[in-house]
Length: 458
Image (cartoon, rainbow, N blue to C red; front, side):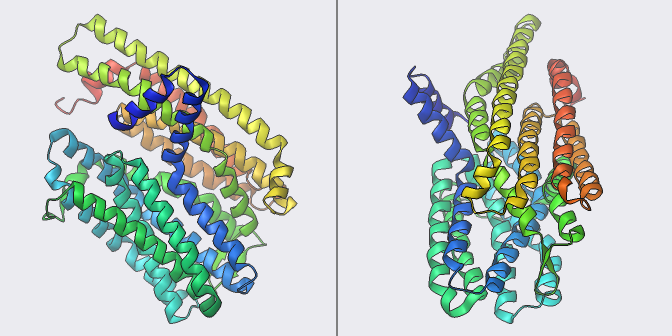
């Protein structure tokens, strides 16, 4: 964390308003840049295509991209979580010559996991042309492989490069789609978007090969060493399913869904309102990112390094109090910021939807989605703190709880239009309460957890 932390500390330490604005703006771009560029590219492609292709072609393109993001995130969830921990171990043990082997092992694992369901869906079940089948399958591979590769570039803390390559890739996707859509319709849109994804993937790989020049040799390193971290795998899988399960339920139970290519179901009014609500959490990400990368890491590092320096119990206890006080204070400030943001979103929901040209009937979904997204992000931050202290099983149980609650509440409310979005909101609220309670409980036992419960030698 040191590299980006130095930059942010320099900005915030200047003591002027402009430095603080710079720090939080920089933080927002680094934490959410790839996400923002992808959304802007998809919005731009949609507006570009609206009057140049048929609605059926545009709907097919959007549906395939949505399904590919859904598939890739779910199948990559356990791979990325376990792979990230193994990479962290390699950094700690100074064995980064194994990093290329881990990367290719993760990429291979994703390809093996996703191939059968994706080829069945696009290759046989969906009513697509051969070119569309190939484009959809290639896109699914590209998106998932990008998730695995980003782990390694992020470990280098080169956020500027990640944001830059995503910007270049999405810019290429926009122009490629514009060039291909008039002659090839939905097929051209999907292949054009794939061109941008390919630039991102190979650009990230090129940077990794520069930083990790060793040749990959052990492609079984992920399953062999990752078995120790099976809890992280379950946690990653359940979390990513939980993010999508309310959409899946609505696709199955909502009477107003669109059916594309004979089998691909989507609920555009629900999906668009929910995805829009996620965008308003970016300021919260920025604040959290600054806190984590500056003050928190200094206290976290001092606490754990005191063990190696054989500090006295009173010194360790004082460092623990620093961490506890800072963590709770940071979350309190985030809760206040999130509460103000949620109130602002609810009150201005009609104006936001009108500005974004989204039907007014989605206002209920948007309000519930925005409130749920705020609570979801806060619970995620609590789980991030728990993960820093290696409380793996509590995080896994929280993610499973979120998954079960989101499915159950969404299923129960799906038949009532005024309650659409409430299932996600209730699940996020329940998870937030449990996550905060779990964090407070474990913070009080931080030293005990470090020496006893999380000590692999015991």
